[in-house]
Image 1 (spheres, rainbow, N blue to C red):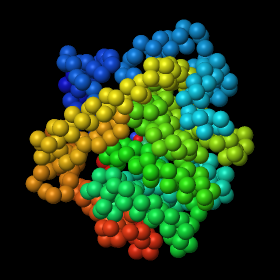
Image 2: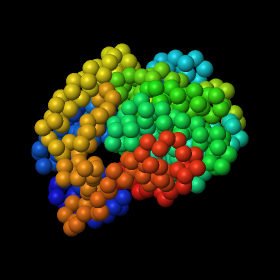
Image 3: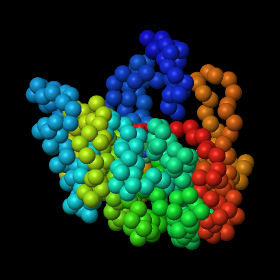
Length: 426
Ligand code: PMP
């Protein structure tokens, strides 16, 4: 059975499946951190549903919430009419939001995936400002649909500035730390203030408080506060993409809370649906210029996902699981950094809360180095290696590179969005 399923999947499914595709596992049961394969073996699940499983697989409170809706005879699909299930979800969601936003916010249910909510956020800020450009950051990942994809690489209407990283070898200015954050903030300012940059005043700016697919890169708090001031001073709506960082994972309920900033728009998905598809944007009331029908879509807010999401959000909040993630994450980071000293293949260990990345490098090379995995299990040969160093020291393919390390802000030579779009294996 096990071999047959794997063979059929490999023969019929598109090769564009996720990086997990090469795992020869056919999961049939799951609970908490563990999945059980059709081969009878048990596995520790490090995929975590790409960040959807804040409470692990099949948590009793989530199953109970789903069963309750099914047993009640409530409609499973009812467009965006008001229901008790939706009312409970929105009430719980607003309880968790950063207070500065919750006081004066609106929610828009979007198509079921994170990328739909990213598109909705772009559409909203464009409608609200009457402008079109979107500024995103190097290394970002916002999804696979047109606008979200552009924001992940920088193309078309979307221009890309550089995100500073606290790790020296990943700092786009080659200096890291507070100085790197300062240079990156000044560079962003100079891009915004230079009429030749192509984005003197974008409709919005989007960022991940901790980049996920970009390699678990936490944004420095001070840099986030600078970006908040820069955008507020210029009336540019700031969009926080918390699709992956939300619901306690980074050690606070939402990752923007570490820096204390209040974004104008928050993009939320993954764990807010308690493992079922759900995506929303939450935004300052003043941005709500949409007329009825301005943002439609059949699958906006699945009732079962809302129920599972309500149970998840409430469980995380009531049991202070964000604080627990902060404690466990600090412990885990310490332990992993201890191991890094003994293993030259560990180039870096970084993260926030329990959103942690271990950067595996080829110790024979000075720069971090990645191998792109083979396209499928059993397929011969590897895709060419991607040298991450190429994007670190002033050579980011997404920005067009060009900057000498430590050369400081460079509104001319290192024009954002000037370079070719880099491909990314998700
Ligand atoms: N934004 C971020 C930060 C993400 O990590 C992802 C998914 N990895 C998305 C958006 C897109 O979400 P989805 O895959 O559900 O479209």
